[in-house]
View 1 (cartoon, rainbow over the protein chains, first blue to last red):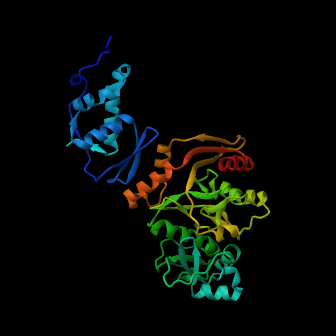
View 2: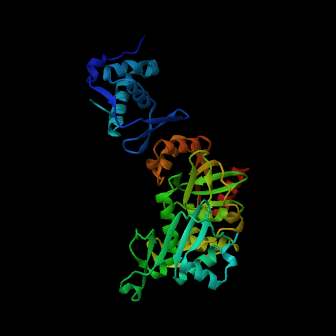
View 3: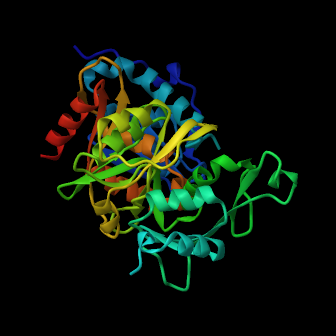
Length: 104
Length: 300
């Protein structure tokens, strides 16, 4: 039986996100953990795999949350899909708090 | 090449009054002072250091009395860099310690051709261990003990990471010990040579440990980093080395760098290369002897 996947339009607001225009962000991967340098603040952060994926996706073009969710589905194990919305929300909040992303 | 120990007391005092060119690692300091404590500190701790004869110096520093009544009454000194006084005056009893702190400040503030990290570094068998750590973690005590136990001291305070090669360059300067650590190291090794104890500083009582002659003789030899170890003294506990994530180590090192954000991408890449080539650990220890055994095993 397929796990129940909530309709994203019902669970998430459809805000659009983009990478903050602070210059070229630098990232590197250590043993599956991503470190990102924010040229706007000069700070370096350790972010989760989901947050790193969001950052990479938004690096291509702004996306709304439904699009981001759809893009993240393939990297989540089916059994964990019920946690996707919470993980997406936490990651977006954290990235926004770090001023790595913003809403246009 | 003339070394400080080859100068007579009169020559050293005379040169200090006019300006003594002292080389420490990749830097040439032009040091001026007529303070007797500065002379005593240099005589006690910098005997093996070479004098420079290059026309261009990296830093011009001076320890002098202020032009106020405090020149005589409860005398004070000021640290001067390029004729600027970045710090408040201190007691004249702190003259040599002020010179040491001021030299650290010069390197941390201006040596942007290196990535500078707040960490001690020692080398053994061609690989260096980098010891970051929060104040009070026992970093300087461990650094001093290792430097008296076969490890080559590169620095106790400021790691100089080459932006191109990723190698760490030595400074080879004295180890700054505080409070109980002074007696611990004095009791640890009969080879420990200290300068004057300085009381009532903002760090408590401080004293500087003389670097070994081999450390100074090899201060032009940079070294790759093999390990990043975060020491934490924990009285009564057995020595324990536990792996630490490289990502977490990267973030800590970046936050404890003096110029990482100044360097931007160059700093990021230098630190990335350093961390990628190193094994990273947390280290808790209760006895210096146990810590030294652990580090000896680490170095192989």
